[in-house]
Length: 371
Image (tube, rainbow, N blue to C red; front, side, top):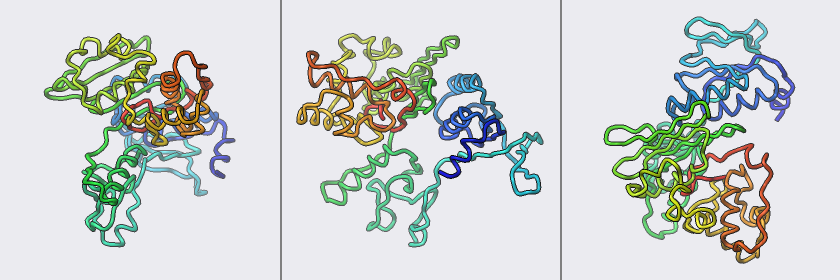
């Protein structure tokens, strides 16, 4: 907190942020809003290369540049230079260029804490190695969350932790032999006014079909990837309203052959098949996760509404914690509320625009409008 307060008053200082991933871009935007002169240095030739394709990445870059953030792409840092006093004064790159820097921020992501496991002789490799029941090489010891490496992946999100914990608890309680098969994750950026969403295999490849919609002037880009009549990936920029619906199709391996011609235009383009409005909320299974931040499924929300006579989103938040964190699932919570209490009941109070748009969820759950 002390460091944050110090940063807060450093208006106009030259700030270099290393690594243009999700956390890096969110930090860059926050620092720029506090009056700093921000340059983002990134190794790839477009931003969020693990979450976006080149086209969407370039649109994102343009939107952030319009806010005054500068970028050095395809660039590797060679040295942090000081002025002899031990304080950084510049950053030198591998091409020899040097830019001034009063502050350097490194957004390098997570690093699994494996110290305890390693000291116990448990094999680790970029995380504690676990099998499909979340057991380590010592079957008496389990690991879940950011410290665990499952099939070569260490997830840095909360939703996979919930999924891993369910399998682990099932195994510990001897309630069967549930297996963790890995998580399909989705991505959203917590930058007000910039809407992006991606999930699954949005790059495509041999045997896949790609459908794209591009409106550079309007700042909208959509890309869907289909393989064997199943939607396997989605990349959305500028219009992410159907991100949750696409994510459900991906997670549940729905056959989209019959709706392929309407797929790009989202759920509402399907008419009755798409279950518009309240029917859309009613069609969601009770087991679907609505709030990824707090692990709240639709069934929990419906039960709370019915048992406690809830009539507003604020009341649902209080009783279930759904939509009480990042707020991006508030719209879906309201739809579920209206669907449950009926159209004749008092309409739920919609949260303020600031609460609804200032942050967005990043968790990967069975329904992607998570928060």
